[in-house]
Image (cartoon, rainbow, N blue to C red):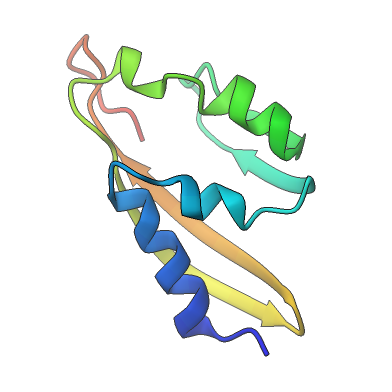
Length: 98
């Protein structure tokens, strides 16, 4: 059974240089929304491939350092989890990239 502790553990991979174990756990079809008004990556993605190509392809190119992520809330129902994740960073122009 899926637990909150397990889900939180998976998101810890985002804080490491090798975050592939995190992405390997995604289904091929997903609903993943990146919010933000200044983000070129904002939008809703419906496949893992689309998410990797459009939202996470070289995100560091516009940042001064890697983003810091924080899981704020988790809802679990059976084998499904909904996660509210916030990420913080700084763009190369000095503006917040959240």
